[in-house]
Amino acid sequence: MIAIVCIDGSGGMLFNRRRQSQDRLLREDLLREAEGRTLWMNAYSAKQFKTLPETVRTAEDFLDQAGNGDLCFVEDRDPACYAGQLEGLIVYRWNRNYPADLFFTVPLEDWTLSRQAEFAGSSHEKITKEVYTK
Image (cartoon, rainbow, N blue to C red; front, side, top):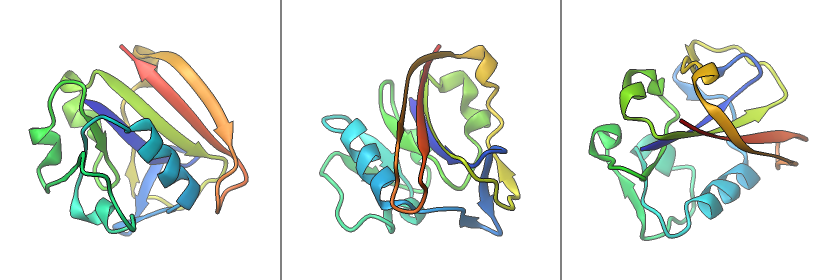
């Protein structure tokens, strides 16, 4: 599986059980990245999308159901406990630090950065997208 996460400058993912940001242009980029592939997420993540392609699967245990090559949009848990199953990572970063009580803890030193791009979001002037492989 390939985990997709959104983090702030200090690796924060959630604060008080709420996502730190929901950027419309980031979501559009995420769906473009997932075109033609199975994308898994839970109901918490799915509710921020107006419409989802047929290739999106929603389940609370989506990380357990995802197979090789499947994408998993992970917002409300750290994917580190699935590190042995991860084939890749897509990390969206914004250039701000927010209060956080859930952090992304997968050590990126163990990964190879294969692609990086910056774009302006709808709520953040700069979002950096990093694609990592093993």
